[in-house]
Structures are given as structure tokens and as C-alpha cells.
Image (cartoon, rainbow, N blue to C red; front, side, top):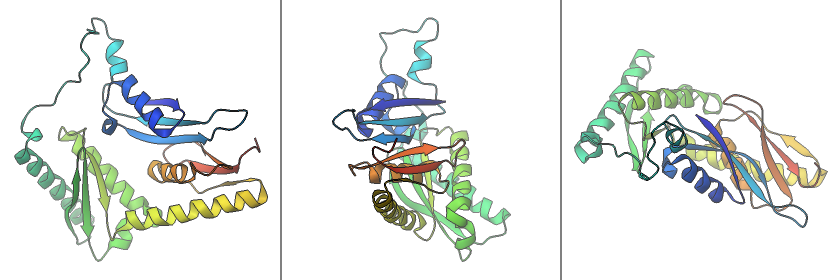
Length: 238
């Protein structure tokens, strides 16, 4: 399901989404669509798009017989909530990705990179890392998507899988932050706008967030589908 929310800040928009949908903040993916700082004649706002595959509080409240006095979310039960269950889930995830690499005829090992609440980082070590990462990380994104689909089929829709190799995610993040500031300087000089290359939701959110505190620059996502483009423009030109 996809929803849109607005707020004066990113945090306010996310808080509003969580309250309206009846989900925890880690229970959905957030994509920033547009940012605008406040000024003398207009209020600042952030527009976000929320992606969730779970049934939300909004749908539940629209169902016949919904008890409005019940405000807590249903709790997940079973061994997956315990430490042993988490270990079994991690083993299934590493085995799945290892088997996927084997069927792709690429040698490599998969291990746990980090653990956070509702998030599991996995690392691929392979002499074929450059191929597995792909141009702009698209192959790594595709593998990550398959991993998240598999996690959902294991009953762990609450868990987001982050896949990395050769510290690509960190290097990509640093590169995008530098790009954002460079583009901001250019639009400030020419008083115009620049449309960036198509990016996945995470990369676009990083561009929006990086430039959100620059007073004379605004951003907006354009296009359809997963890989949209971010337009960075000088404030006041539209």
C-alpha cells in the first residue's frame, strides 16, 4: 500500500503517518517526495510517500465491526520473537543468499553485518563483488529485494534486510552527499534547476535530507516507478 503525508518537518510527517496508519515507525518505508523551507510568504513542509505491505490501522478502522477502543497493534508470537528464533531466521537468510549466489555461478559467502530492531544487515564477500553490486548498485538492490521477499515469506514482514558488499552502501552514501552539495552550489549560481539521474527510494531520500537545511534550495521527486529522479532547484524560481 502507498500513502502520502505532509508535515512541517520530515519527523512530523513520519509521526503523522505512523499515527494515521497505526504502525510503528520502523514498520514502513519512507520516501521523501518534496521539501520546501519556510519563508516570509509561505510555510515550510515536507511531503513523504509511505510504502507498506502490512494491513494498516487505516484499513482496519474501515472494516465493519472494528473496535475503536482497541488501540494497540496485534503482537507477533511464536519462536521468531525469541533469540533462538532470530538465530534461525538469520541462518535461513544467509543460506538463501548463499544458495542464490551458487545458482548464479558466483562464489561468495554471506554473513551478518549488523543487527538492529526491525533491520538485519547482511554482507556478501566475493571476488565477483563488482558484478554483484552492478552499475549504481542496481544488482545489489535486486538481490536485496529478493532477500526481503524471502524474509516476508518466512513470516518476517517486520524485518527489513539491508544487503551490502565491499562497503558499497557507505561509499555510495558519501558520494551522494557530495553530489547533493555540488548540485546545490550549481543551482545557486545559475538560479535554475538540475534534474539528477534516476535513483532508488533510499538514494533519493538521502538527497532530499541532505539539502533540506539549505535555505535557498528545494528538492522534488519526479517520474513514476521505483527509480524516480530528484530535481534540485533554486528557491523562488517556481
